Length: 177
Image 1 (cartoon, helix red, strand yellow):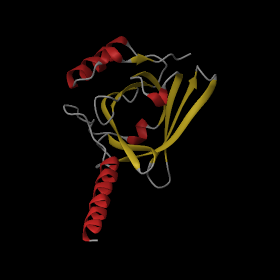
Image 2 (spheres, rainbow, N blue to C red):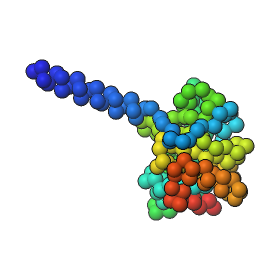
Image 3 (cartoon, rainbow, N blue to C red):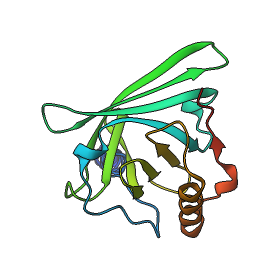
Image 4 (cartoon, rainbow, N blue to C red):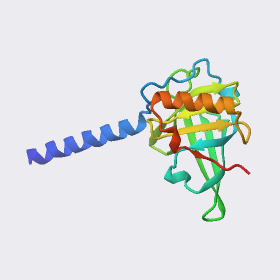
């Protein structure tokens, strides 16, 4: 009987560690979040310019992310894109929260609570263009307030991402009609 209690306690402890790790967002080694960040300036609509091939965004074009302030101080996230295989729009609504200080662009985002992922703005040009890293080198986005991005900003973002260790040759350049 004692063995079963120890096994149950160990199992609950491991489950707790799993849940805690799922709730703790990360930032890739070598990446640094933007400081002096203003969420008010970041709110609004962004166009997805590039991303890796994530299953939850597969076959999507015309992808946008819209950020709005919730009454409780969190940020509402609404991602939309047109699924070219299903010929219909897809969307996902989530919530973002700051990891620490609101002037540091390290957030955690959840579309399926209690699971949170890192959303780290690691480069930002005048709140018009953003390079966003996830928890690790599997997640990266290039965002723009317009459907295109200037070549010099694109090259700057790619150089920074490569220096961190991202395989930028695997980026998908999102079709924006």
